[in-house]
Length: 132
Image 1 (tube, rainbow, N blue to C red):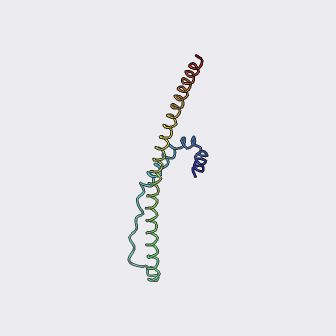
Image 2 (cartoon, rainbow, N blue to C red):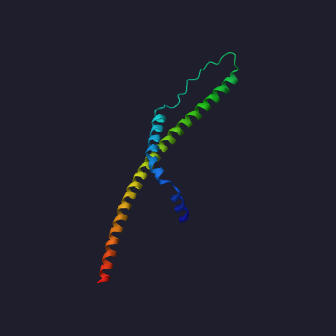
Image 3 (cartoon, rainbow, N blue to C red):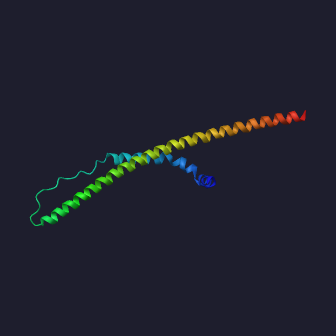
């Protein structure tokens, strides 16, 4: 199981992920700001007097269908707000994760350099001790 995850992690183009993280975060913020500014769809007041040319049963049926559609649009708007808020939160978390990965990458390079210098020093000391 671990080998599968390791293969997946190796196949990810991390350079592109790191380079595009700020763009993803900015895009999510723009999405949230544009969706968040839109008010929910206002439901217009229904006209209580049906037109004389339309059958009252058909008019009542149309009003019921309109109310159902307005409720569905309102639900979709709420879902869109929740989804865009989630996308923004995930993009922010992604940006923080990428910053942490970048910091760890830099620390790993410094640590690798220190290990190489320390290993070289120990090897040189060991060779000097063996030569005596």
